[in-house]
Length: 369
Length: 101
Image (cartoon, rainbow over all chains, first blue to last red; front, side, top):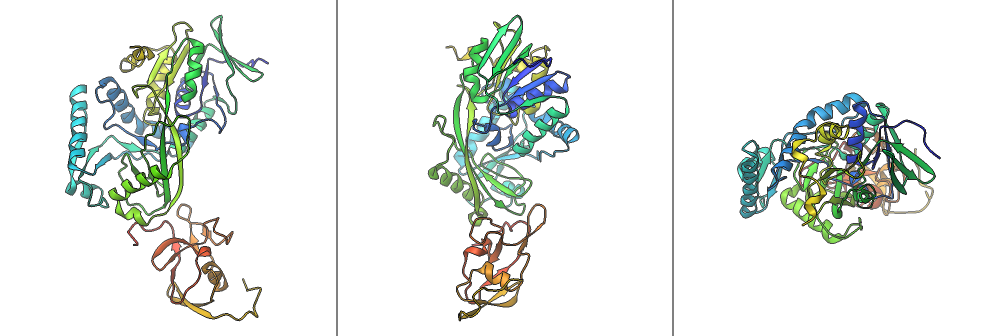
């Protein structure tokens, strides 16, 4: 059966990456259909930590540092726009984030990295190194083991689930068509059209965006692209709701708008296993308690594992197919931070605009060495 | 509102304090049962919407019977037995952040 609706673009993958691109395309007036799998798919967008993060990103890669920083700067306007269009508050708080260090050596190393990024991108890169006293003034509940922290005023966090909901709602309000629970069985490029088969249905459009996370690995070669992405597991703990005590998020601990404390930041190469292990959960909890001793008496109510989508060098892959013009692959690890760029400049490029200067280096050819 | 279905069974009584008010309970009862017997409803207000809550499952699953027991917050009252002199406080909203240890 062929779907007769006239479409401009098919997007495969309804995570935060695919949804941001689809939302951006629909906002620009395109007729977009988004194909998404079911809840048995690996869903990084539903298991992540929700940081809008700048500091430390793009070391030795100034183009990425700039692209990522532009995304963070665009976030307040993006959050406002989503709220206006959908009525959904994504709980953006962007008053700066901290990387807490448990030794002077760690603090010196972090500070050195940030200074290196600042030099590499040409000076405009705000951060401060805080000693214990300065840190306690900003975040009064840090524990005695914390030596200091690095503070970046552009860092923040959102509710990743509210973000995903806002993108779904915004996309639908703009006339976007979402098809959940479908699996892509085949893709053909014929006479300038992409024919995507899901079960007995064929979807036809002039453009195709692959944003299927780990699924891109198998899909990209069907349209002359590559996405050599691998899973990297993170585990997360979530506590009962606590009265607000922590305003500034860090890589390991953040408190949500509704009072929940989220703990995380493990990195494990364990294939497609998105489970949890007591050893990692205990390590995460231990570090969190050393940073914030008051967490010792707080109950954990939920834990989970989720799989990051990592390219070999950790940077995004943004590429247009040369053998199948109109096909694009989009994949990255920082789908939340970059959502504002994906809905904006990246979607504009996919619509036929100029390629943003900072992303020209994100082709998969860089992995051919 | 609630009454025991085994009223003839003789048991020792235990005295506890709820919000500073003395309440007698039967030895061996869970705290949730003791509070229901004493007419303490609701047990708490939820952190986000402030809605009233009372026990639903009475078997450790629903987490709706949370109270503060001897300084420990968010304790499932259906999972602890009453004891003499137990100090119980009802909670409204999210737990306090300070260390209760």
